[in-house]
Length: 557
Ligand code: TXA
Ligand code: MG
Image 1 (cartoon, rainbow, N blue to C red):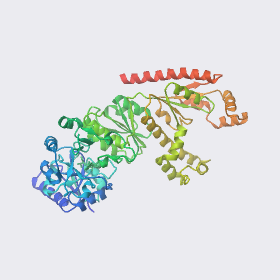
Image 2 (image 1 turned 60 degrees about the vertical axis):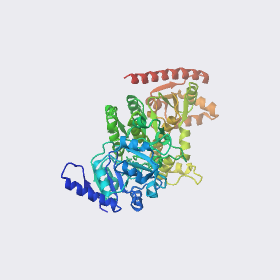
Image 3 (image 1 turned 30 degrees about the vertical axis):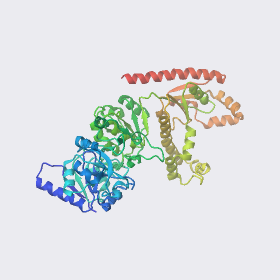
């Protein structure tokens, strides 16, 4: 199908021409076609909301799950009573104050609205968009326009006609180009069928403005966190991992200088960054999208979807995003970023200290980590996390399968022999396996540290350096021991011969490797474990002090 493009960016030109275009666009809607329309928030993919067949085509074109209802777009409050029943006076108060504008109200529906439009719910979302061209088209069509955002399901919403064409060209009858969207994030959704009214989605109209009229408003859990399996959000669309670019996203909240520093600290060589203008210089050499000044949330809202879209088609393998605080439009911007990240969020204000420990066996790593625990720290055993992920993490398992074929047994466990045979002696294959592991494991470690925030974390990893885990750490510590001591210790600890102990040590990286690549060295020459524990304690206490001081310095700057 050829998608017709109506350029209506110039509303001051010849009026007859404009009227003809409006008429032609309205005709598409009247005759059951699909028409992408500009609004002040994002572009919508519209159809006659009373025509079940036309509405069905919206779901097809977007690949949208059938259980996700659509919003009806109307030219003003006078249409409310046509499609809604039991409309409370508050709805008219809000419409008078905020329409046309980025507010969607959920109200009881009348039966003229077909089931497909509301996904079978007994309520319907209604809004009056603030866009002259679209309002004129709706009036000319004489029907309410059901319109979700015009993106393919799961992709970031479209904020200009070119984005719409990227997703919908050839699938719909027409696109109305009304210029870039002035707000940039979708409408705020308020459920008026419950008491107190409930915010189902933060959007272009700040919560504070609504509260100033409504009073108390409940905030749905889906707005601020990832729902657990089986939990249902009241706006069905909020359960989907929306707005997602192809590379995984990590959102960093907190004071802008701190979040910027946190990103510098964590990012790998192929990281892309979404940041406030003031901090862009810190990320030179990376693919960067600027959101606008950290003080200018209106600009950030306009740019957030564009920023999320921009990384697809680049070689970026992970994305970090600075996040505004949640006041005003910040709640909606942060919600879109966090949804793109699957709510993978790190708070830079929270002064979490992460220390990575590495070193060969018998050097004293376990002992040092025990001391860290005594100092109140939590320890993550990176090997153990990796083996758990092999069992459960679908992303990692899929990535391994894609390269190595079916190496998982019927009961889901990894067939180590099979995989071992494939990588053993094949440097390229081993490299491929490592790349997969080094991509997935750090993400999972970050997720765990964010999910269970503690002031002090220790990462226990023999391949801390090779695995790129150093970027998660404030400091990396090499625990080393002179070779002769190590030989004796392993012999005693594991009850093995001297020859075998030497063989094992010989198979590991030499101490020099850890020494050269870590931030600091904890040398274990003590004659007893107790003695080493005391030395390790002094060492770690001092190290933690240093890190704290450094963090405060950054805070002051
Ligand atoms: O700004 C906007 O609202 C844009 C423009 C095009 O108007 N539209 C938009 O539509 O964002 P969409 O379909 O992408 O998001 C609509 C959201 C979904 O999360 C959906 O589940 C929710 O509104 N929704 C629609 N009807 C609902 C209802 N009756 N009850 C609860 N949630 C509803
Ligand atoms: Mg949408």
